[in-house]
Length: 167
Image (cartoon, rainbow, N blue to C red; front, side, top):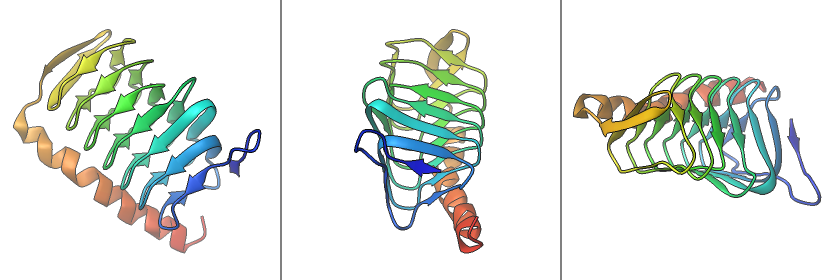
C-alpha cells in the first residue's frame, strides 16, 4: 500500500517494486531497482526517507524518519530489522532483527549482525562489523565483501519476478 500524507507521497522509480502488502507512506523516494517486501513499513511522517538504487527492505522491516533517514545504494535491510532516522551508506547489510537507532551513521560496506542494537549517535567507518547489544564496532573481515556486493542484484532480480506477476 502506497499512501500520501499531508500532500507528500512516495516517489517510486518505475523499475522499483513495492509489495501490495507493504505500507509505504509520506515523503519517500525509492530508487531504481529497489524493493519493499511484504509486511515492511516505510514511514516518513516527519522527515524524508530516501532509499537508493538496488536496495531492499525485506519482510517485516521498519524504516521510520522522525527526521531524515537515508538508505544508500545496494543496501539490505533484513527481515524484521528497524532503521530509525539513521544514515546507511552503500553496500551495507542490516541483519535480521537488528535495530539501528537515531543519528547512527554507517559508512559504506558495513555489516550489522542479526539481532544487534546500534545505539543512537554511533558512527561506524566504512568496512565495519557491528555486533552485539549494544553493538560494538569492529573491522569487517574482507571475506564478507562478496555478500555485501551481491545482495542488491539478487533481490532486484527476485523483485522483478514478483512485479511481473503483479504481486
